Length: 505
Image (cartoon, rainbow, N blue to C red):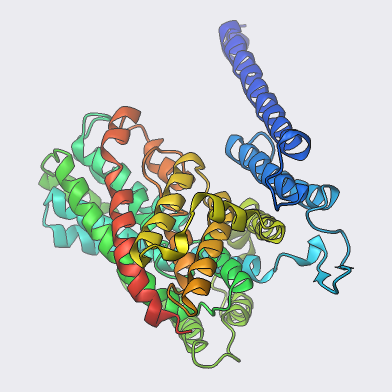
């Protein structure tokens, strides 16, 4: 009898769970209702500015409704993507079937407006991530950092942030963040740190996710949003954003921003001294990481050859970086190579993100086709053609930063920001009669400020650190803003110069 009572949940527990479930349902219903109202307002009520078709307002309504659904997670991300493919033709933004207009212009079907190349490229990124996660390589890096720090708390913060950023350039930033947050907090706990009391704990739960986000900018492999930006800008403007060009422009940016951010974070918190026994405890945990394994050697050769071919695609267009990613994803599973198992591969693929990338591509095409982005630029950025180039770049960076402050998910921010920036750069270059602003700059701003925001812990990567409970929301808001500001300043100063030689026109 006693055992059956122990198994049965308490009535108050059942009530709390039912109450929480009802609240969640109400929040989802409210979000769906808000999305529907926004969509109907722009479709039927919102005045249409002069010179724009009603479909322009429809496209804006669909975008805002999707953002509401994505941010609230009222329905799965994939369902929202399916909704995009339904709503764009129903509202007349894009046709179901390829159509020839009276003037002879051919408008492609909504199903032909997004390329599967970018999502397929993402599969290679996640294959690399799964393969690296199956080896002790990240733990080797952590061990090197801890030895280098010699017990200095500031050096631990700086070293682990730099290691996280470097790993995030070559594997998915989400995975890099999860690995190094775990390693970092094991050190804090071994040191006797107390949640919301340990300065070292606070510094690391802000620093590691920040480094993962910023490091993910460095190469096209670091974040799926990088490839989304590249795909969008190449489809909208006459520029080729090469693999090597992206690395030339963004690896220095990532390293500098991460280093400056680590200095800020190590200074703004009062870091407690790290006891020798804590360092010894972590060293014992990493003692098994000895000797290079055959799997690591195979992984290094596989990755270096793939990376080298992607760089070579800069000079040999026949070596397409997308095709390289396809081929090496297959090679990873060949008998005798076996870099990862089917189970590990499937476990590391965020299908919702891949589907969101597909939906964002077609949604951005719909926005551009209606002319709403051009109208917005002509209305808000009046006389932008006469602005100094630096002011234009600052404005584009600021618009992207502000959008991300209100929209916590990267791809929807990119879907808003990239069409606006394309319209701005097109107007400026047309007025100048040449290339004053390199279009590749748009992709870099979108991949940076469109993805990185540390103002509040809402991004999925930022949440990996925040949800561990080592810092309060108030202290996060008060002290975590600086890395985003550093990225804003460095982007505005470096990218106009770097993209000029990284992406020659």
